[in-house]
Image (cartoon, rainbow, N blue to C red; front, top):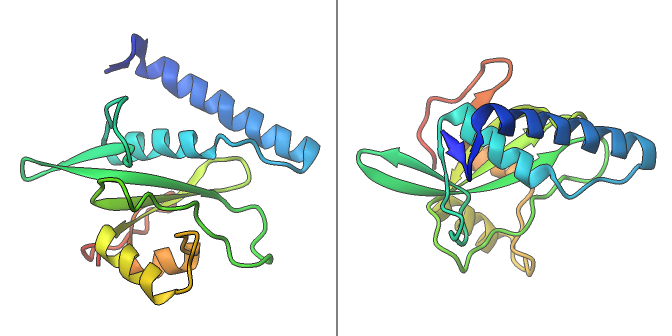
Length: 164
């Protein structure tokens, strides 16, 4: 598989370098680089065997084939540096765009994946409606994990139940 003429090996090498640079930048400055989303998309595609969304896709980042049907997946990222701060939130869900489910890639302080969770669009929309007023269209990491299921974890523990 190639992405715009670049082989998988080269993409993996670039993502590993991006991880290293983002982690070093944070340690040096205390600030984060806005790169975790791209790393998360790459990790989800690689670890879950997904296909990248077409370059012109709006609202979703990856595609999963299920029974001959393409499921559009929006990928969200969260690097967790300090568990003692206020609850971590995801970036805004693109509710005005077409997608079927969202993936949450949780990363450690080195931008390495720790877990990947999935929640259906219906479950996320219900959670957002319950959390009114929620003008930003965001959900906490904890809430996402409660309404979804764990598809992958680096320690091998996952949920077998279907997405709610």
